Length: 295
Image (cartoon, rainbow, N blue to C red; front, side, top):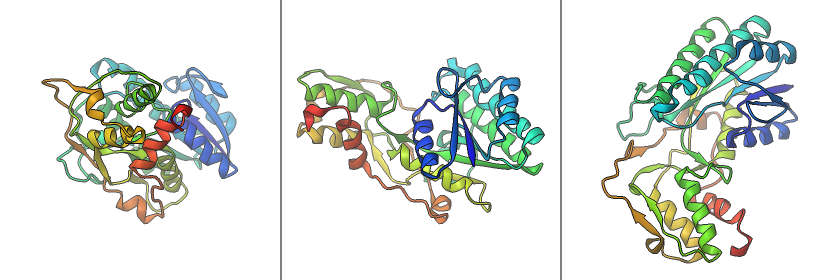
């Protein structure tokens, strides 16, 4: 068995590759900048050649710029929307028995503050969610043509591989520096925002759980457990035995995109998947992994 991962150089690609190797599945990593194969998923000829020549058992489309900002409109359309169409059309033409995973997101649903499930209503409230919604309808269309197309709606998940601008990593890195003697103060917005803090390695196990069965084709993948940014501050600074209040300044007038974003993972859990790490485990992983001076 073999698999192609488009967008393999992010945290999800890293942990998914680990899970696939554990399953003795050969992995071909594809990205625009690094990996086994360098190329752009928005280029149909490139995608078609890879799928035609490799004849993969599994295809995972993870490529995206994970921002909801408007200035990423065309990039997200090309990578997420066009990339999805390119993969699905190439599979239809050249290896229709492949299993294809398309990444969805919790932010593409109408958010009323209640736990979100895969059957809830979509809402195109950003260029990112617009692209995700389009890719889901493409997946459903090609599924109607007989392809094995899965959609996993991923809720917030974190790891030491997160980029520094994400609030989870921003805080973890600041704690590492403070452990080394820094007296810095970090500036944050609304720390009462509640979301999930699931380990990315658990989420990628959920992805494989979904594609290894043939009864459910769309599922929310998340812990279903929410914590605030303040909870994350308490966990990370607690590792040092320090009070976060001395190292955080809150911005006045900051308005967050949402107050609460939580999943209802009943469907994926019914398939046997459960997260293995909680908030404290994740905080320790992210703060301690690259900070030997804390040990």
